[in-house]
Image (cartoon, rainbow, N blue to C red; front, top):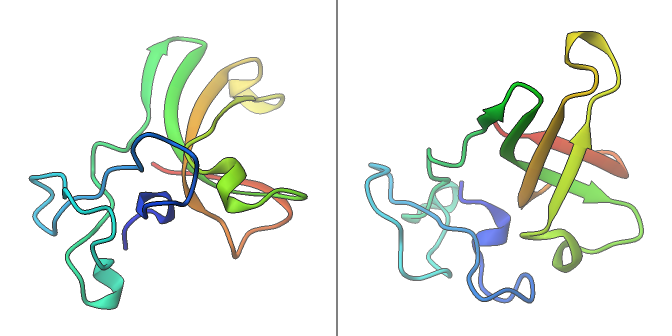
Length: 113
């Protein structure tokens, strides 16, 4: 499927999240192109993957569901997630929300990898 935040008018932004064709070789110009899971041509782009900036900082993408907010509040927004346990304690991942997490808990980030 394509990211939920790829649809126009999901959030007050100048451009929604990019969607790609099935071959993943071009960005689609129409933000309202039908999602691939509905028989259309729009899919998540493979360049929406995390990357490391330095040992304690990385950037990436996530789906989210945040209690008390709507999708228009979190679509395309960025959040700094600081890990508190295991070997990654103290490291930060800054994510841009590109998808909704309708099937997630009330305060939940589903990190795209």
